[in-house]
Structures are given as structure tokens and as C-alpha cells.
Length: 425
Image (tube, rainbow, N blue to C red; front, side):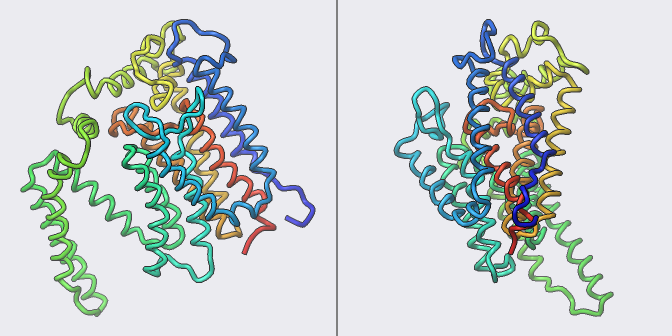
């Protein structure tokens, strides 16, 4: 972009954003816990408040797009530091809601700093990794990057809010794009598989599977090394790997019973099919699945949407908003929602790849990762494939902090992308 040219904002991303926000508002309206609907402008109801939040977001968008593009990189460290202070301050000035100390009281509204810490962390990671002579292959640089990501998560977990902390795993996408090996993701998947496997399969079977898999990997690697006329692989490394996996598996029972809270254990048990509790801890998931099934192909009218209109899905307008979309709009509505999210994530990745500026590219992948993990976990828990962990659906779940946090996250990147031709290292 030549000097004096106007920035070209990505219209496709903006239109998708507007569509998701609009669908979210209509879904919140249908799922509102009221006996009688009033004007959508009624700020005494959740849909009126959400419309007010949308208005605030419109102002935020104007501000974000008006600020000098280099502001976000220049002050990334300061923004990150402020977010950490705001998270730590909850333990002194925070308000407890539903058992979690995650909000600051602001009159009749509340402010959740964990929603804003996501974009602050994305900026900080992008700032650090975009510096000259910084590489994830360097142990020191990798540890610093891991620390930047872990700090906000560690402040969020004790609130307790493990769902929000889990989202910080999304930064793996950005780190992998910058050279981090897929082995790190493989280790995470292996740890998860061993943990869940130990809960549903007899421990001795898990141990046998570990020994068999490690032995096969060793024999396979030995054969490949021999074909390439290279030194044989060091067998003791495979023995160490097997011992670590076995020790981790044997500790699963202690971790599950002594570290996780009762509600988390119960939700995992329900998803794994170890217990059936449709009237207790599994009530939300069961009612959510009924609502989605009731929607059929094209959805039900508000009078016919018995699950949504009757309030059978608790807090449906927040984390379970996807079930309201499923009942009122049917398979058609859920498909449109899923397609819009996938298009937005795909669009962000395309935009990230065309960046000339390293900072903008890393930030873009952070945005895509956060959106994907939020979308994947929220929809997964609403349809009963994942435990309920209290993660909102971006742009659609009720809540000012969430909507504003996601809006800032996206539009900072749209701003960076608009200046990609003139702003790069």
C-alpha cells in the first residue's frame, strides 16, 4: 500500500462477524429467560443488554481502526502487563458469581478480565517472537514464550475457571506456524488419551498397550535407521518414554480423585458414559441435546420450541446458545452457524499467511487458534461430546466482556491486515 492510500479492510471478515453477531442476538432473544417478550431495546432484559453491548463494540471497532497501526506492537508488553494485573486483582476486588471469582462489579454490570487477556496474550506472544534473533528452537526463547502463555492461565485456574485457562492451548497453532514441532501437540494428545483411557479401561490393559506401542515404534525406527545405514536408535530412550507413560497412567486415579473438583469429575464421567445422571450434573447436556433434536430440519417457532421457550436448558442464552439455534433454526441454522465460523477461521488464516509483518502473522494465527478452540469446545459440549467447561461461543453467547473481547481480538488483526503492504519488518 503506497503512502497516502486508504487502508483496505477485509470486508469478508467484517460481514461474517456481523452475521454471527446478528444470529447471536436473535438466538439470545429466543432463549431469553422471560415469561413475556418485550421490545428488543429493553435493557432490563438480556437481549436488550446484548444490543447495548453490540453498540459498545461498534464504538470499539471505530477506535481500533482509528489508532495508528504500530500502536499494537509498540504497546503489546504494556497491554499484557495490565491484563495480568487485572487478573491478579480479582483475588482482592473480584465478585464471585456461580462459585467463580472471575468478575469485577460495575454497577448493574460485571467485567470479566479473562476475556480481554486473550488478545493481550496474543499481542505479547507476537511481540516477543517477532523480535530479531528469537527462535522457538532456542530453549530459552521457547521457555519465555511458554511463560507468556502460561502466566494468565495460571492466574485464571484458581478462580476456578479451568475452561478459560484451557483456551491458552490455542496458541500452539501460532507456535507451530513459527517452527514448533508437532511432537509437542502429539505429547499433549498422548497425555489426554492416556488419562481418559485409564478412566474407562482397566489399568493393566493400558499398561500393556503402552508397552506394545513403544516396542513397535522402536522396532520400526530401528528398521528405518538400518535402511538408511545410520546408527541404530538408542533403545534406552524408548524405555524411558515407556516408564514415563506408565508412571503417568498410574497417577491418573490420584489426579482424577484428588485434584479435579467434583463437578469436573462428574462431567467427565457423564461424557465417558461411566455414569448416567440426566437429572443432576448431566441435566444441561441432556436438555441441550433434546432441544437440538427437537429443532428438526428447519426449526420450530417460538411457541413450538418447548425446550427453549420453557427454559429447560439452564443459562441457555450464555454457554448453551448453540442449542437455542438448533431448536429455533433446526439443522439449517446450525449448519449456517458452523459454516460461518469455519469461513471466519479460514479467512483469518488466509489473512495471516499474506502478512509481510512477522508480528501480524503470529497474531493472526493466535486469533485463528482462539476462535477455533472456543468454537470446537463449545459446540462439542453442547452436543454432549465434551464435558461442560463453561466456554462461550464467540460473538453469539450473551455477555458484554466476551463479545467485546472477541471483537477487539478480531478487529486488531483486521487493522494490521489493512496495512500489510506498508507495515512490515
